[in-house]
Image (cartoon, rainbow, N blue to C red; front, side, top):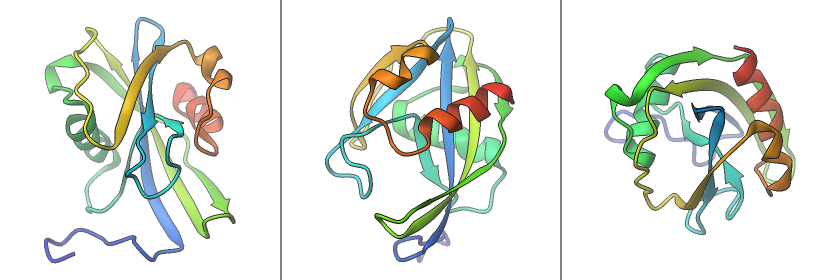
Length: 146
């Protein structure tokens, strides 16, 4: 892009961060809106392209601020999880997924942007009840293991 960010529009190999927000044993789950590019109306954590050359934690925190209005003062700790790779033949993309677990010191007021239509706080065991993006269950396990 003209501003220096990496354009993944036509890329077959895509690096993303997937940030799981945890407070009081619950994980924040967000429903992707109908205006996003891939996986419309599917449940996900906070996610974003590595479209800048910055460290994973910094990218994750940037996405948290942009997508739900989280403040630095809300964050207790962050942990990087194990990377995973997933090829989705239906859309012709291979995702390199960097999971991050962000534990909060207080429950924030969530301010959704246009990427999401709703959110829920769930226990990790409840994830299977939702129609989520591919690999979200494994990515959550990778984030929780740190």
